[in-house]
Amino acid sequence: MRTIREVGIVGYGVYVPQYRVSDEEIARIWHREAPPPVKEKSVVNLDEDSITMSVEAARYAIARARIDPRDIEAIRVGTESKPYAVKPCATVVAEAIGATPKVLACDLEFACKAGTEGLQDCIALVASGMTKYAMAIGVDTAQGRPGDELEYTAGCGAAAYIVGLKSDDTIAYFEGSYSFVTDTPDFWRREGQFYPRHTGRFTGEPAYFRHIVSAAKGLMDELGLKPSDFDYAVFHQPNLKFPLRVARILGFDREKVQPGIVVTEIGNTYAASMLIGLASVLDVAKPGQRILAVSFGSGAGSDAFSIIVQDAIEDKRNLAPRVRDLIRRRALIDYALYVKHRRKIRV
Amino acid sequence: MSVPIYWRESKYRYKLIGSECMKCHKRFYPPKRVCPVCGSRELKDVKLPDKGHVVTYTIIRVPPKGYEEYAPYPIALIELEDGTRLIAQLTDVDPKDVKIGMVVKATFRKLSEIGRDGIIQYGVKFRPLIENES
Ligand SMILES: [Zn+2]
Image 1 (cartoon, rainbow over the protein chains, first blue to last red):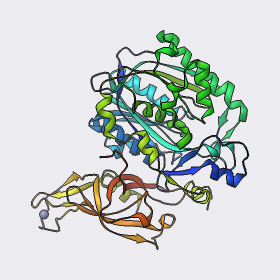
Image 2: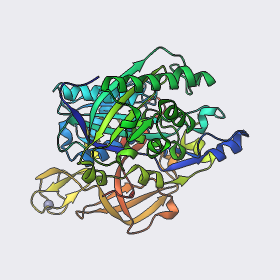
Image 3: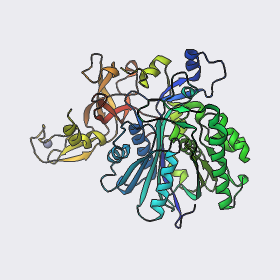
Image 4: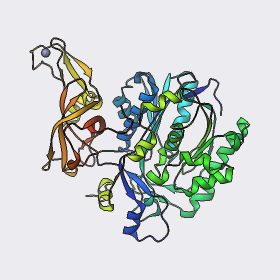
């Protein structure tokens, strides 16, 4: 998909809560013998949720964008961990950043791809001229059933991207995007249920790999590009194995994938996962470099983007904490405190 | 806090908006209608700086109803960069690590929840500065 007018990113911001629980600690409780999928995962404080993390990420994005928040005329919050079943996160975020009341605001749900689905919307809203700027947020406070494989990775985090027409103020622009969606029952959570369910091994081949590979290939075909044309590749990160393997299938070297890998230190942040990986690439990328970024959401689908970094990145990246700074801010907690922070005991 | 009161005051809590006296230019948080310094009724809303330092603090070990799960937690007198002083809860810091003079930054957090099915109240707290944060 290509827009008639070129659109770019004017600012981006990431937030990762400071608490971490290690996979070693989770394995101590559940007697896991196989090697754990990541090192640690991020855990929210008791006073944090998807709304508060969205606000933090949005404020950093605004700091980098150097714009008046009233010019953000659309906000999309993509999440599967809404504090309210009914009442949008986006309205609270819009109010807290000062974007109300002339603003389009709503939440989107598409498992881990809800954030990039919002990004597609924002690209269209800006390219069409309907809004000056539009902000897409991917955020989750993911929960895994105690002892389940998902508990070793389900993390917390947020990423916000402000989209505007391509100019000297955009830090990168979109060359094109591609979405690939099918009805695939790999992972779900029914209304009223606290924890999700998944189909184990089935989540790999027909879900993650098929959708990411198809979206990435579809995009490269449309743009006439091949893996060697890209300097970086970022994929959704449910664990460390999957993004490395999908990179190999597509023909990307490990060096192009490594800068965007954050899962080993903060876990799978679901709707924020690929967007935080992309931010960590933007933290180090040079003007003129090309990035392939592909999300994956269960259910299932992938959004792929080809992004070219611009000169403004050099100035703007220092206006807010980098992903590395947020990863370094780290307080390790034990399983008992983790259970309290994640309200796993329902009193 | 009732839902209507929470909603009316949310602008001040969400964005750290205080009031400034148009006569003596003192600033207040929470905002006031009458200037406690010069008695003027001419005050206007003003966005206060998000950064400041801890002047003094105390640790709440016996919290009021609705805040039990956060205890023990620090409450601090904070002086913002423009000199405005306010009292706020500190978060993301172990009570034993709080120091006088510590630089802190405003953050948007849950203040309390009115039961499992009630409204979630959000507002400003302060936390230690993150690297590369201005
Ligand atoms: Zn006065």
